[in-house]
Image (cartoon, rainbow over all chains, first blue to last red; front, top):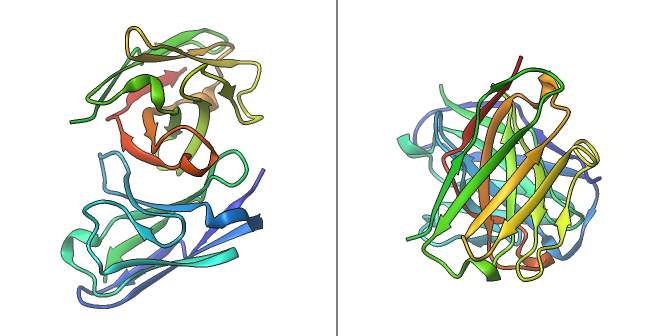
Length: 107
Length: 121
C-alpha cells in the first residue's frame, strides 16, 4: 500500500497569500497518478487536480499542481476567502489511498 | 447532471451487518468505475472499495477485505456495499464516488454523493 503523508497539518494564512501544500508518497507514483481534493465542513470533497497537474473542469487557475515520483505539491496562488478548507491528495498508481489532509485556515 | 444518492446508513451494534446503497443518475452508469470512500469523524478520507465498470471486478484495501463486499446492478444504476462483522472503527460517513471512467488511469473521483452515516456502537 502506498502511504501518502501531507504536510503541514495546518496552514494559517491570510487572504491574498500563497499556499503551498505537500504530499509525499512512501513509494514512487507511476504516471503521475495523483489527485487533489478540496473539502469544506459538512460537504463532500471536490476534485481539483488529477494527473498531478491537470485542473478539473471549472477549477480556477489559481490552483496548480506539480511534482513527480514521490513528491507532489498543490499551490494556491492567491487565497480567496472560499479557499479556506481541507485539502487531500490521493494516489491511484497502486490501488487507491488518500493522504491525511492539510487544513488551510484563516490567520 | 450526475447525481449519487446514498442510503442505508444506521446505528448498528459491533459484530452486526449493514448494506449501503448508492443510486446513480445522469450518466451511462455501466461504463464507470465506482467506489465507496469513508471518513471517520474528524479524520481523513479512506478508500473502502472499488468496482470496475462493465463486468464489475471488485477491489478492496486489506483493512476491509473479507468483511466488506461491493457489487453493482447496472439495470438499477445502483451500487451496494455489504458490510459484515462491523467494528467501532468502521464508524464513518460513507461516500459513494464515481470515477472518471473505468481503468487504472481513471481511478480518481470526479463526482461524490453527500454521504450516509454509519455508527457502530
